[in-house]
Image (tube, rainbow over all chains, first blue to last red; front, side):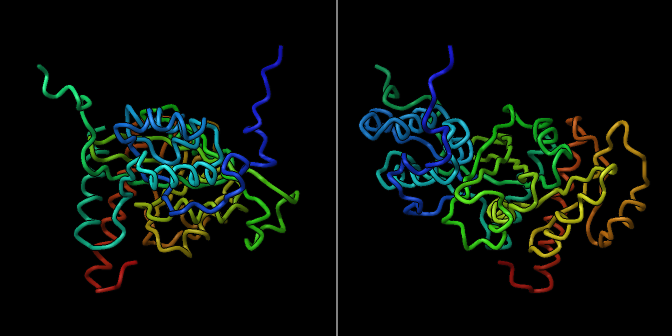
Length: 120
Length: 204
């Protein structure tokens, strides 16, 4: 027996699941984390198979865009389009990536990362 | 009645900040091993697809076939607090995928360029890349068992690594060693930020 071929694994037409859209409606950093809103799993049942899987993954814990792409086996760009749609539809809450501006904010974050690493 | 029943146990904090450190280096240098040594999850792989829509990328001519090509990146995760997650991203092994490196380093805390002394020349392209980017980085020499042993200064000289770039000897398989590399990256990032702040340089 061979496993049924998953058309999403065929990278010839990677953007078929986004109906050909390659640009997300907003940019999302690869490490930005997403959390499902309370009704997300219920509502995502009607949003298509891939969005439903993403909602289920983001329900128990915050997941980055990179994790969502890896766990759903969707190419990064495809996952980004879907996730951006889901943020716009209030299915997912987008959390911030690290602050890129402001000396104090950046130093605070670096200090927290440093102490986190030392405690590992 | 349980008044909290409508709330999920351990509801997520209002803002979760994620930071990332990039582990760069040539193919087979131990990037995924390094990520796996400290990650709380088995390293995951995410794939980016470069389509003909990426034709503006100057390296597209070097991509073997027209149409699409896939770039794989391995990464891991360290949940440091309820509201702070650190991600470690390994760069794609093939350095021709610079466009993906650009995306990976965007917003990163810093980077470690992993070097294998058996194939020193593989380190030139990654080192050149970071020399031309505004991101703090250090060089981590992965001491493979069968690799020739060099003094850190010998490696620095062979690779023409500037004095301001820290160089650490490490073992990518060992958690404590990898921790030391990551701590080195963050300390270097802090020192760089402080130096720039004192010079009044606008930091983008």
